[in-house]
Length: 95
Image (cartoon, rainbow, N blue to C red; front, side, top):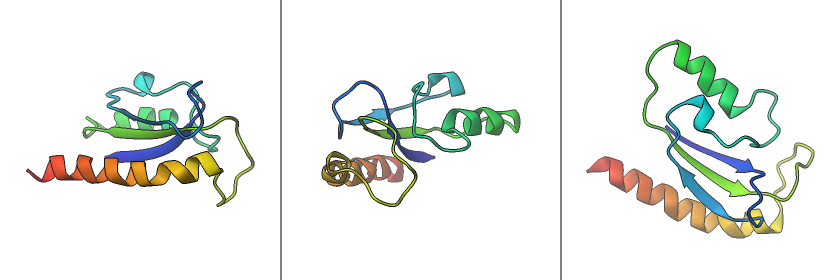
């Protein structure tokens, strides 16, 4: 499972991170402002049984913004790095 989300993690906006959380408690404390957070979703899914391996790719943001399809310039600039990282993750799984 590959998840991509924004994170308020005190890193400079646009910083890309790659985590391997195994439990809901392994997720960063402040992900983006979804009605149901990723931690909650993973916690609920774990009730159903063992979770698949999770790759969490986050892009650091400065502050929460209202929900829209627009992204900040630092996030937009980070997208090629995210795309390359996802490619490396997928390449590693195909072997």
